[in-house]
Image 1 (cartoon, rainbow, N blue to C red):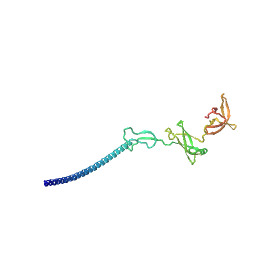
Image 2: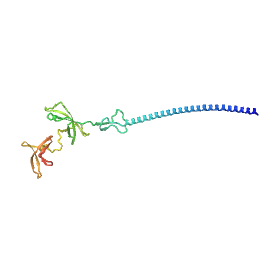
Image 3: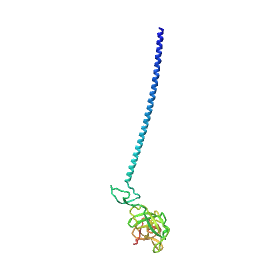
Image 4: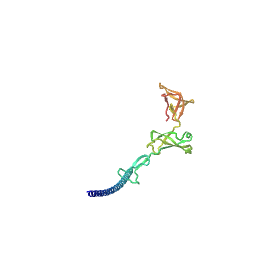
Length: 259
């Protein structure tokens, strides 16, 4: 009885030992399988990253091509717009809508809005009163109802002499906002502003007369009678005379215009 029990115990131990060896082998195989799957996962992750980078690169290239296409379309659109090289007025169009043009074709005739100058001569007696920057009033014979403003831009230092021997100096005037009405070669009259007197009483130059060495004007009173009155004159521009004393505002002055 004792031997049989010992033999049975020994056999159980052997079976247990054998079972223990089989579990170790299974564990090693499982770890190997896990490593393989992990490596396969890393490979697939690398492949995915490569595909993702390739996709992003293709997208970037496609975007760049689209941007280039938009830029070319914009340039083509700009080529359909003709821009004048200078400011001015279009006088004539050489082509109609829908016609093709080349770089050699003339499209339009323009009048350039360049600065308009008036050129006049001032005698030596008056040239001392003319200075650069001085205000000027200009009237054009072809536009009698309009008065243009300007400034003296140049006074020649060298004198010129006309056929009668009169010495004069050439003066150039820049006109302000001449518009398109003034044409080259038009005749104009120039008035130089030598002095400005604000808020003063003036009468026409022809209304002032010298009587016995005194300056007088003819005043019409409320009864319609004409009365000579002595005045004290101030500055004159040859057209009007400043009255310092002797007249009040709204009084009527009588004079005869010279023909």
